[in-house]
Amino acid sequence: MWLERLWQGTLDTFLMVGVSSLIALLVGIPLAVILVTSGQGGIYQAPLLNKALGAFVNLFRSVPFLILMVALIPFTRLIVGTTYGVWAAVVPLTLAATPFFARIAEVSLREVDHGLIEAAQAMGCRRWHIIWHVLLPEARPGIVGGFTITLVATINSSAMAGAIGAGGLGDLAYRYGYQRFDSQVMLTVIVLLVILVAAIQFAGDRMAKLLNHR
Image (cartoon, rainbow, N blue to C red; front, side, top):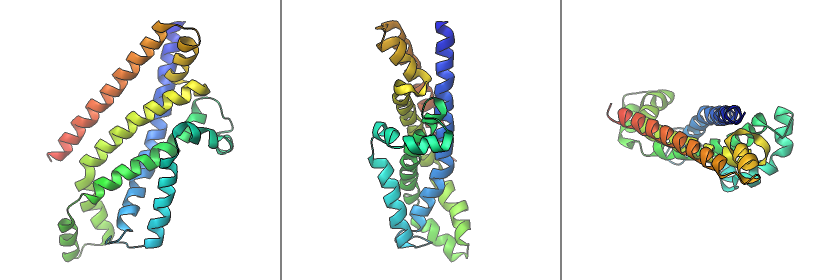
């Protein structure tokens, strides 16, 4: 019975983190590209859009996850029809992870040598070609490293969400470890989370190094 709960909690954590991180990746990169290209000196300068989007990203980044999760309860109920369980946690996890990752990806994109962009412009490349063939390829190692950090942060947030009814390893540790004073459960969950984070960090670092050497 305990092993079944542990297995289910692990699957729930993978589901919460996997779905929210995937959405953060798919939305965060375009957000970062818009922030970089619409800013001062960008290839698509749009100051008003840049400021509005920057303020939106900063708003969600500045709110602690626990407060954000509670504040989003009406929105979460509207989206998934419930405020309890794995899918209810995906909504706040996604809205926390996306701006976090977008800012990290933005930094990586800004670190691309501006001379490469100027060279591409001098060759007559279209602006979207510059984004696709210069900015994104050159920033890949940093983006991969940033996504690894985002995954780790999302795992931490999922454990917090689990402690208040979202399921996953956090829920397991809280209900069967903390509330029942079972140190074995707490230790098992901690070990699993450490292994999971270490594996993700190792894989992310290796991928970033490989991309950096290409």
